[in-house]
Length: 523
Image 1: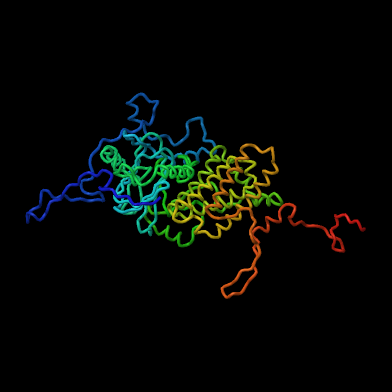
Image 2 (image 1 turned 90 degrees about the vertical axis):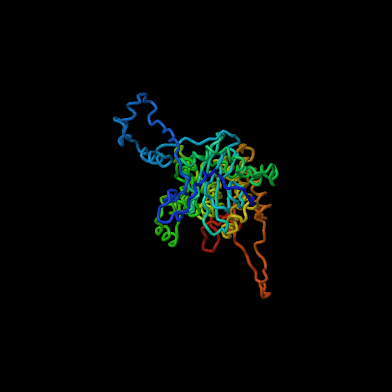
């Protein structure tokens, strides 16, 4: 959804600024009312506030006098307890996931859901959240946000600059999330704690002027332009797109503290290949705020589904079917990685890729789609729940890309779109063969895979006009511009057609050119 939002006055709350008198009013003497200002903050926007109570470092210590003498925690493990293998990485991971002292969440008492405030955003800006985007004037934030993961992003109206955004994971606690536009670096950052406290204190004065989540056109109005069914449809498609995204997944992929999940158009997937120009640009940037950050996914784009130590038919099977590679990756994590996390990464790559124009995330989405999921032909039998979740997620991606976005994710990747069409055709054949072989022994979960693929096929037919049955013209005459007719033949499914009983085989021939192991009724 797209539109225009016009707020009458800037939001959120701003402290009235001091006025500066004319220093030349009294010539030859200094004006007592003149004020010299240094720094990036406007005159009059800073004020004193009470310091938030720090969280106690030791809950078991009852003696207040001893708390004053507590120093930093020891670097060595407790006496008599050695660090086990893997503990070091766990400690480093925990330090990356949270700040040393977690500030308590800011909450409001007006109900309705969480609130997101964006400070200092330019007057005219393109704003997007979840499945909605619009051009806003004096945008201040969004209220009445329902529970679940949500993605916000902003961009200049001319569309020539990079986009930046952030994730939040809301609950029914009426939390206030405060972010700020950095005018110098032109990126979104978390607001200072002091500024966030001021906004929460004054939230009641401008809460009603914030953009309602369900219908941004209803700002300062009783009813907006969106119908109730349209709002419910926007929320439903977003829940399908983010059904497996969680706090733990966002922290693991972005490697930022809780509630500070910032992403940018220039962020790169760890392990992806950078061209020479991108590497030189990243090295030339001295500002840490503008440097490329890495996103960490489970499946490396350069990885293979087989090992070089494997040979023969085993290596061939692993190279042509990624089922073992996918399942073994989950099992090797020993509980640190679940099947839902794999789907969550697939959803994360799509959302960040299409909304921020992040090419690295788009390539990660294609890699997981074509090289991992659609080549896992045995996955419907070995892990039917994961397969059904993937098929439903892909259905939501294709539907959202065709009906909600200005340009489909398939438009800018013609070769990969062609590979996707062929991969879906092959996948349909393999799935039908497996379910036919299982017959009455198929479980309810395995039958659900067939239902999920039927929904995907219906979306592909209606949105993309693709025929997945493989029954299309493979040889024919094409007339060129000069009127000449040329016979063309496609070999897209040649390898698939020669599979099974039609597959080529190596045989032993006798001196007359006949196969030796066949029975002849003449000899």
